[in-house]
Image (cartoon, rainbow, N blue to C red; front, side, top):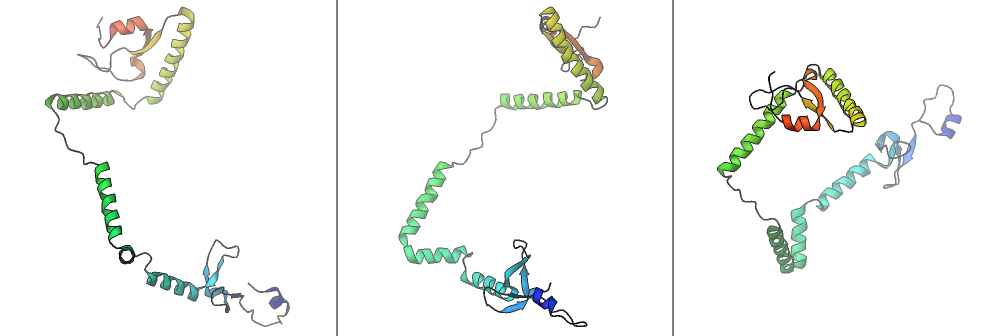
Length: 198
């Protein structure tokens, strides 16, 4: 980058001089290569030179603003016992608000119930198979459409049902396209989880 007056005053064979920028901290004119890169500025270069930037960081670190122990010591020397008393009251209030959860042992009935629940969920997950998933989804959409049509025509409620129930007592079916049927609400309630072999 060159200044407009530098470009106009250049003679043939002369080497171009790098752009010079003034640092806002030390007020010295320095080469652009000695400035911090910053995308926040239009030019992509900060208004502070590298040297001043390093000095600022060093001064900030020496001030100990991030050192919480030093900050606490300063506050203690300034406020003394009142600060300690206030901190202990706050800690006590926090302890009272958040009581520790006591671990309660589950009864045998609760253990059986949770075991049965997790077991039935596992069995149900096993019923859903990934093969022919697109066909199964298509049949389900068609079955839903069929329930609405039949309800309009017959004014009865229709359900989508599994021919062989997913959680039958003696036999369990799969959630696949050829195990889906549309039957009336009364028939579905009457059937329940039973499968009658004809």
